[in-house]
Figure 1 (cartoon, one colour):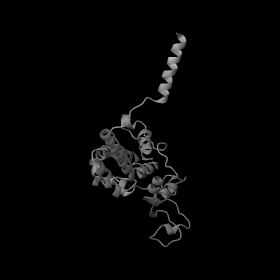
Figure 2: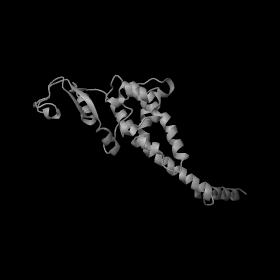
Figure 3: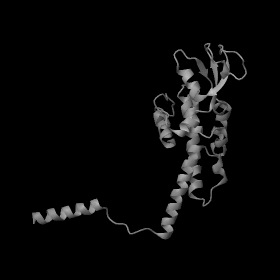
Figure 4: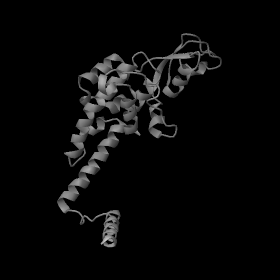
Length: 225
């Protein structure tokens, strides 16, 4: 799921690889309704400012005893709910950025993303970030750039840990859920390769299709003689 998402993120942003320009993400990433990571990622809360009065939903504001939500009310809501409110026409609420994607945190990731504890920031950091960018926030281009560059630099380190360590490194606890999947997959591949190199494998045989093709060529040659 994660690899598909990042391919969509990187490839869906027009000219990102060639010109480093971030374009629209509207069609680049579509969360899967039945994906557990997507469900958990969209549980993250985001700040919302209501732009219209909403009747009978005052209970959503824990700091108010009013029956209705008034214009200008600020509430933190799960992303899945906030995105619905934002995409209505007209929009019911404006969605802000959670602190993990604000400028101060983006600067930390730009400086050295390898040392950042993404699991502590958000267990589904990349999934959440890609979903957040679908709302076309004015800072979405910057968020996209941080997601892609952070993944590129952290990916090299993850592969290094996976291929050159026989035991699980402590730093793996700082990986977000998607990175942990990549790390574990890398360790399994490394172990399999080491086993094959040390113990050897079975005799390599030609595929049945190849053998059949050779037989057909021999038969045709006999007919022509």
